[in-house]
Length: 279
Ligand SMILES: Nc1ncnc2c1ncn2[C@@H]1O[C@H](COP(=O)(O)OP(=O)(O)OP(=O)(O)O)[C@@H](O)[C@H]1O
Ligand SMILES: [Mg+2]
Image (tube, rainbow, N blue to C red):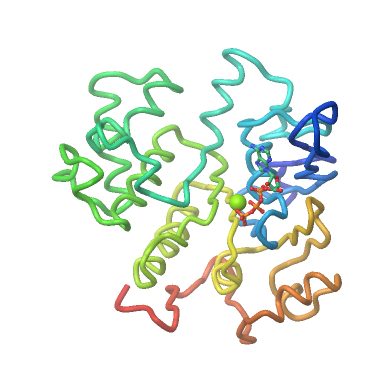
């Protein structure tokens, strides 16, 4: 099967800071190219400051690239403006690391979940309400939470709300930037299992950024290793963990990872970390 990739980045470069000002510009992303096949998970790893989040922000067009291009479902998002840009934004969504700060504390859960669908898809009234309820159900939360506020929810519940928010616009791509690192370990496992289920149910493609190698082994099909703004190695997850080529990848992996093989993506058993309680 030759599915078109959901995302294709070609030679993406992004720097911060003006050379005219004092201090050199930071070359955060330096000529990164990759393709993420539809309905697969691409794990992006690399030390802090290596440019993972900046690259994700380039994909989502939250920042403009200096050069290169990003295609989402065949459309170059780096050149879009106005209505066309708004329309493509509904096909790519970000799930934040900190579930509390991702939600407006003054908005009810119902309003938070409804916001992207209202803004990006123009949904209103009954249609919007039923989309919100459906997405809340999809992430395993009950409708009794709809009138609550983020401060009344647990971290895991807030992260589920964040995922429901993203789902309301029916995206093709979800960027998951450290989606579980702010959560309790037992809750992390539940969220990862939920993300796996949702990927199959909603035909989602994931870009997963994480420092947790266990998470990348469990979730990812392909892995990319970033080092100082460059993608130094891309490989299938099993290949990378068994036989990393680049010295930096080997150094990163040697910092600590178990060696048992990962299961095929379509038949993943529930994630159970060593500290997990019942999922
Ligand atoms: N808005 C910005 N203005 C100036 N520099 C920035 C900005 N955003 C990121 N940078 C710089 O770009 C580089 C890459 O940062 P980025 O946040 O993408 O790294 P990261 O790999 O996501 O790190 P972490 O794992 O800590 O989240 C860093 O040197 C960072 O300081
Ligand atoms: Mg980051």
